[in-house]
Image (tube, rainbow, N blue to C red):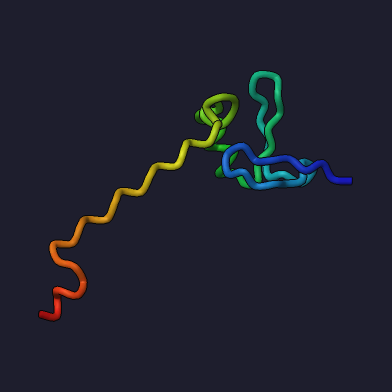
Length: 76
Protein backbone atom coordinates (compact mmCIF):
# COMPACT_ATOMS: atom_id res chain seq x y z
CA UNK A 1 0.00 0.00 0.00
CA UNK A 2 1.26 3.48 -0.87
CA UNK A 3 2.29 5.82 1.91
CA UNK A 4 0.23 8.95 1.35
CA UNK A 5 1.76 12.16 2.68
CA UNK A 6 0.82 15.82 2.53
CA UNK A 7 2.97 18.33 0.64
CA UNK A 8 3.64 21.01 3.31
CA UNK A 9 3.65 23.83 0.75
CA UNK A 10 0.44 23.29 -1.22
CA UNK A 11 -1.31 20.68 0.96
CA UNK A 12 -1.71 18.14 -1.84
CA UNK A 13 -1.90 14.47 -0.81
CA UNK A 14 0.80 12.53 -2.66
CA UNK A 15 2.39 9.08 -2.67
CA UNK A 16 5.79 9.34 -0.93
CA UNK A 17 7.25 6.73 -3.31
CA UNK A 18 6.46 8.81 -6.42
CA UNK A 19 6.96 12.32 -4.97
CA UNK A 20 8.71 14.88 -7.19
CA UNK A 21 11.22 15.55 -4.43
CA UNK A 22 11.93 15.47 -0.73
CA UNK A 23 13.80 17.54 1.84
CA UNK A 24 14.83 16.92 5.41
CA UNK A 25 14.24 19.59 8.03
CA UNK A 26 14.89 19.17 11.76
CA UNK A 27 15.11 15.40 11.38
CA UNK A 28 11.82 15.03 9.48
CA UNK A 29 11.56 14.18 5.78
CA UNK A 30 9.01 16.19 3.78
CA UNK A 31 7.76 15.17 0.32
CA UNK A 32 6.63 17.44 -2.51
CA UNK A 33 4.26 17.14 -5.46
CA UNK A 34 6.40 19.36 -7.70
CA UNK A 35 9.87 20.86 -7.84
CA UNK A 36 8.37 24.34 -7.31
CA UNK A 37 6.97 23.28 -3.92
CA UNK A 38 10.34 21.81 -2.93
CA UNK A 39 12.13 25.02 -3.95
CA UNK A 40 9.71 27.16 -1.91
CA UNK A 41 10.12 24.88 1.11
CA UNK A 42 13.92 24.82 0.87
CA UNK A 43 14.01 28.64 0.81
CA UNK A 44 11.90 29.03 4.00
CA UNK A 45 11.15 25.70 5.69
CA UNK A 46 9.98 27.26 8.96
CA UNK A 47 7.21 29.01 7.01
CA UNK A 48 5.67 25.62 6.15
CA UNK A 49 6.15 23.52 9.31
CA UNK A 50 5.28 23.85 12.98
CA UNK A 51 3.40 26.81 14.41
CA UNK A 52 4.23 29.00 11.44
CA UNK A 53 2.36 26.57 9.17
CA UNK A 54 -0.95 26.95 11.00
CA UNK A 55 -3.60 28.34 8.66
CA UNK A 56 -4.19 32.04 8.95
CA UNK A 57 -7.60 33.01 10.28
CA UNK A 58 -10.03 34.21 7.66
CA UNK A 59 -10.42 37.95 7.47
CA UNK A 60 -13.91 39.36 7.79
CA UNK A 61 -15.30 40.83 4.61
CA UNK A 62 -15.69 44.60 4.79
CA UNK A 63 -19.27 45.76 4.93
CA UNK A 64 -20.76 47.03 1.70
CA UNK A 65 -21.02 50.80 1.53
CA UNK A 66 -24.42 52.09 2.57
CA UNK A 67 -26.50 53.39 -0.33
CA UNK A 68 -27.48 57.03 -0.28
CA UNK A 69 -31.00 56.08 -1.38
CA UNK A 70 -33.17 53.07 -0.75
CA UNK A 71 -33.87 50.97 -3.82
CA UNK A 72 -37.39 52.27 -4.38
CA UNK A 73 -36.28 55.91 -4.26
CA UNK A 74 -34.33 55.54 -7.52
CA UNK A 75 -37.57 55.50 -9.55
CA UNK A 76 -38.96 58.74 -8.25
